[in-house]
Length: 155
Image 1 (cartoon, rainbow, N blue to C red):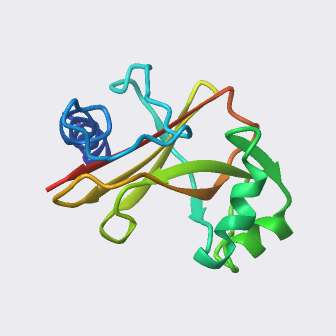
Image 2: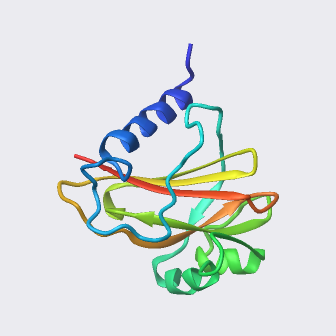
């Protein structure tokens, strides 16, 4: 029998494949270069990762950190500043790219498996919108080799 987390993972994946960025009837008006579709087996076991979104007043500063690479290690002081005190991760802090469609009606999920990181945002909306860049601070022992950055929107 599947656990509640596993069902949530499967449902989220189905939403991405059905109504999200991976759908031919796309939920965006223009794809952002940060978007990186997952080409891994989404039904394998992925582990949830602690994260905190960067405060809206610090997004530009955080984006500057991840312009050259999708994930960079940052010190605790920087993590606390970027999240305006919301950071309390146990592992070293990593700033990672993210994209959103309708940030106000959605939420993030961050998971890892075999040095791969999957950052996704799922939201609600009725029309295609442009992707918007943001950054999350994630708790990881080491930098991931691959970072998948996806988003989806359902009605």
